[in-house]
Image (cartoon, rainbow, N blue to C red; front, side, top):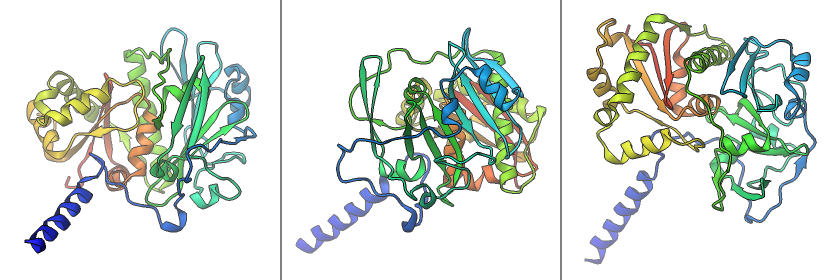
Length: 368
């Protein structure tokens, strides 16, 4: 009897261990030599670093930044007083800036490799980052008479480490979990950092003025162009031909997204997954994202009239939320899923549709 109980206990422990996996992606661990350990104490006070090249742009008038970077290649209004601007078009100089209500830079996303010396650079490893820099796992942020206590998990430290600068801005490096190298860098003002917070809040503080983004056709078109450009930058970095934005594929993506919005409970049959999808979709600040699994994609295709193309000719990726496309794409590229699918878009036709917190990406199948 004791022997049977012992065997059952071992089986139960194995089941619990194997079942504790993120709901969508299983991240490949970085080599042990490059991993960063969490500090034993959560009471560590973070050090403020001298603002580097791009950190100094945060909080500055965009008109002054344009004098340095040149005219933007694309511009869109988030709402009546906020804008997004894209600068550059290649892996050398690609950058996006968010402009706040006062005409100042609220955040920057940098994917261009030609970056002046800073704490983070494209292609850096964790070992490079940690050379002379101790990464912190806890930050205390004071904003609008509130104190936000933020904790980075061990996985956060190895995939999206964070530093704070002496001008009040933050920088987050987005690492590819396969190679352990930096894919992109996000710079934030204090308010924008709290609006895009992809880390755990220790206390129960909430931002009193969440960012409001109007879901306009102009914004959706800009987001689709931006995502297409960023996909091309990633392909270029891998020395691959860029993906080709295709109108026929985009029509399919629009059709599938319309069905997904109207018939989500028919697409996602699992009540727990449906609740999680709906909760994430409606969040202004999200720490993770979800994709539809293959069964849900199959149901989505059955519900849609995709007769304009052969369903065997294309594959579908559906994701929520889309509150920050840069964080989303860095997460997709940084994980095992991204390696398997997004890195395989070389020279393929793609279609993109974004609306109501959801993204549908349609691309040519390898079987075509």
